[in-house]
Image 1 (cartoon, rainbow, N blue to C red):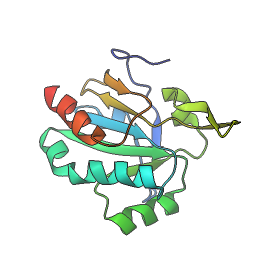
Image 2 (cartoon, helix red, strand yellow):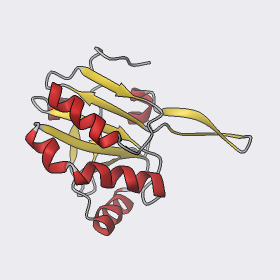
Image 3 (tube, rainbow, N blue to C red):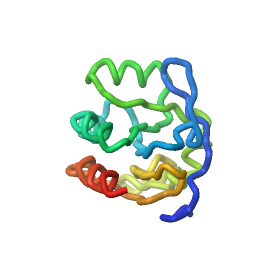
Image 4 (cartoon, rainbow, N blue to C red):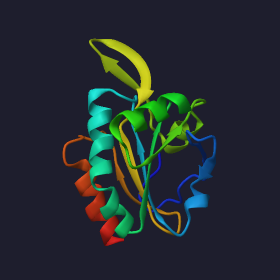
Length: 153
């Protein structure tokens, strides 16, 4: 399990426009890498809108925001367009990014066990080191908390 102070895994991220980026490719910037279960669901929409509302503040702090889920690039683009999101969303169709960050976990709903994405955020410093980790994220106020931590780096 990753912990604060560890070097972030250098995973490749597939973006909706067909391009790719990687954690190493974002070196020299503060990277907010947040994992969420599914596009266009209530909690995930609220979280994305929270980060979008503060996108200019994150940019002034030198931070880039990338959300990660297993949704397809086309679904991500529809989600971005529908809500006017000002962040990049990456598709993790094979689950390798979630595995690398330890966010693919067993969950339980109404007594049924299943595998899914743990809502988690990783704040990665300019040197590629994980500065902060939030697991089991509660959406309300989360973007503000991450912004405060990013400004402190």
